[in-house]
Image 1 (cartoon, one colour):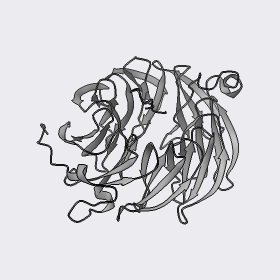
Image 2 (tube, one colour; image 1 turned 180 degrees about the horizontal axis):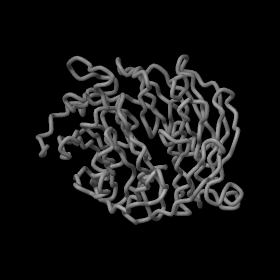
Image 3 (tube, rainbow, N blue to C red; image 1 turned 180 degrees about the vertical axis):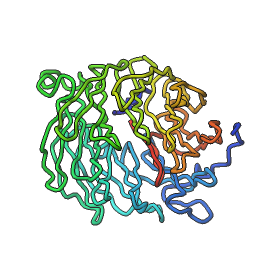
Image 4 (cartoon, rainbow, N blue to C red; image 1 turned 45 degrees about the vertical axis):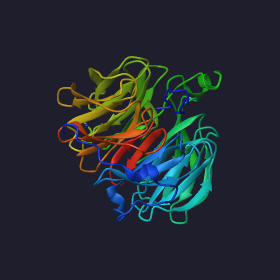
Length: 396
């Protein structure tokens, strides 16, 4: 979702004294003193308004470097092997590749128009960029760091998700009410799955007036996926064998983000439109079993690896709601900075980093006690998305 500069969104142990973040005095490409940590010990934050990436040492929670990237970076993503960090430059129509160890830029290449979100194939061979404004995918060979294919998809594509074996890519077309299915071995579109009113209805509407599917969440154990539909206020359940919609599950207003728990039991859906709710769907019955009231302007969800708790980032109420997944109840509300946007969790589920675009800082949550550990200042201007090697994250 594109960011609106006037302030609207595109899409934590007792408080400990914040450690001094010396990165605020660093120039581009200048390193803070000391030994650089390993790639898995770093957090990468894309700063939309200062067009750079802040690198945080996860052990000290201090910024050790800021790296100049493309204009208005939307999302950083660490490669599966931990070698590189890829960053989309939404307003410069390019991707910057950073060596995750030396923290130097190794390549910058052009893609389509308005690149925002991206993903890696399960085997790490390809890196796929979703170009929101030119309605296409850019396929990048991670071995050569070169573009190998541009593939047209639906209007205003938002996200790309891969089947477990990597043979299929699913691309949500927000303005065309469809999901494009790409055969990755041949780079050809093999199906289009109508969502909500479908492409024929969407084509009759002015561009920008419809908001269909944004995300395609594939179940880890069953051959089906869940697709929230903002305009129809429901979630489509898609059969991955037939590419047919099996069912539409009514949820709250303007659902825009869905996350499946690691054990595959629950699908949590973030509802917008001022509803301040998350719908909990039982993945066995595909029925809503609970409506959970959270904060305002929820952007996304992170589950702990053991699936016992879920964390909802609430942009407009400046907090994170902690949900007990056994009861589907909010058990704690954690204060963040101003306008929290996205979050990333370490692989062991003990720490969460939340970007705050309004206060230009990052809130660090100790997830073992669900309290603020520290706030990292001087990360850059307008921190948006964040990623950690080996961890989990979301972007909007």
